[in-house]
Image (cartoon, rainbow, N blue to C red; front, side, top):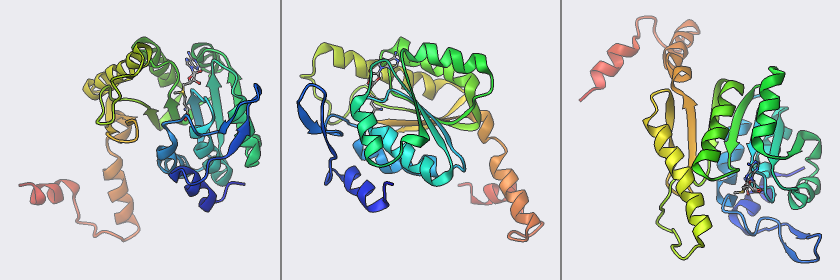
Length: 248
Ligand SMILES: C[S@@+](CC[C@H](N)C(=O)[O-])C[C@H]1O[C@@H](n2cnc3c(N)ncnc32)[C@H](O)[C@@H]1O
């Protein structure tokens, strides 16, 4: 099991689980990931949903998977990951913390797995991370294929979602520059699309957090109705009046 203290030490960089790579090279499992600082956010998002079903596109060395799996182990959830490459370091990391039984891994292009999940028609996901192919076309295709299998009220996360950041390293090879640009364009598209509501966090390599706007509409009003029903709000309370009174 992965206790909170160990998890926070990993997130802060104080602890970096070491692994012997198949080729003999040794490095910490999380050395290469710019996702590490997002670990508490990823964990909190998944842990807030009972029996959370997580779909992770892009696993690499298992950084984001670790946060999702910690949450899944606590809320009776499950994490499905897909990566075009094999992920021996992620597997070892997940095994190290006894989380393998909460994890399904599919090796191959995300498009193939997403088509299979759609065809099955039974799998819905509460939380989806799009962090695989970082080209605009690749990330956009992932989003399009994720939409039909997103559970009502589900959350989509995008990573590296802003193309230029304060810590942007302009000396990166051209391939990596395109990588950032692709996800940035997807972010712009999502921000302009009236069907989606959300934002990107302009730090920690820009995590985007998105929901279908239709899933948000009426949610506060339903909460207010429930609060009135259980006596937490007076029956004469009206959202519109309250907003009107507070408007400048
Ligand atoms: C940025 S890394 C993922 C990082 C990971 N989420 C983390 O927290 O460290 C991107 C991963 O996506 C994988 N990938 C790239 N294109 C893909 C595709 N079309 N389908 C599935 N995985 C893909 C790469 O092999 C790589 O491991």
